[in-house]
Image (cartoon, rainbow over all chains, first blue to last red; front, top):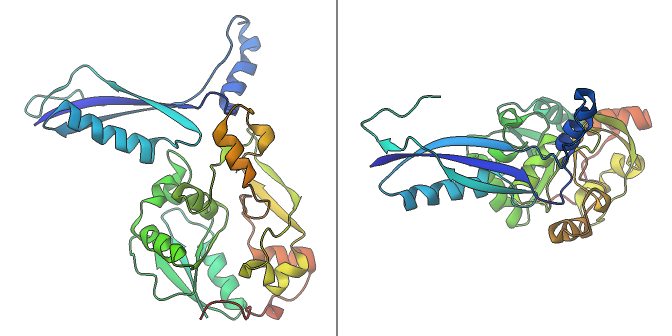
Length: 95
Length: 201
């Protein structure tokens, strides 16, 4: 068994109104920034899966991302395998 | 008639709902989120509040609680389920009503009187005498709303199908109880409410 560390990045679907992103964008003039646009605000979840194989671990993360971490009606997600994946006997970087 | 009110960790209008049911002359039963037992109730109320802290998305963690498995089966078998405020968000996340809720476009909390109309007259809610008399205008308070067509771009297929089925009545995040609404709008005695004849046995 090994530990696999993943990040799940969740963003509002393209075309879905993102009031947070818009609020950030509207604040930019206060910082005298004029060349930034199309701000989208999402969520990043990091988690460790203990599993026999990477494919198995990824399937678990994919299921979680679909069911719990994102709402497929309004959000999209991307799964990222992080560095530092190791066996259960070695130390996983603590949060 | 026996009606159950679910308490999730973070529910805060469960006691209001229980009181309102008692005042209306209905036997009110507390249901606990960790127990799949619905105690043989005729209807289930998911009350307002902040179930599981509203983490990730409001309502999504509550969706996986043991009681919701039973509520889904209950609804599938034709049982009545009422979601108020956060309870409505739980319904949306559970797929018991279509669509999803987004933060208000303004990012501000909105509290105002809104005009509502019953979408279905064969549901027991509009036939509750106080609702039938008073529900043309209700006070609402919400941080999130089911998007209407103008909140989406027209290119989104999901948005179109969602707005096509949008309803006016249920999709507001209510934080006032019916009891309070009744008093504010109609100024009538709460005790005059009678349970409808149409509840399932």
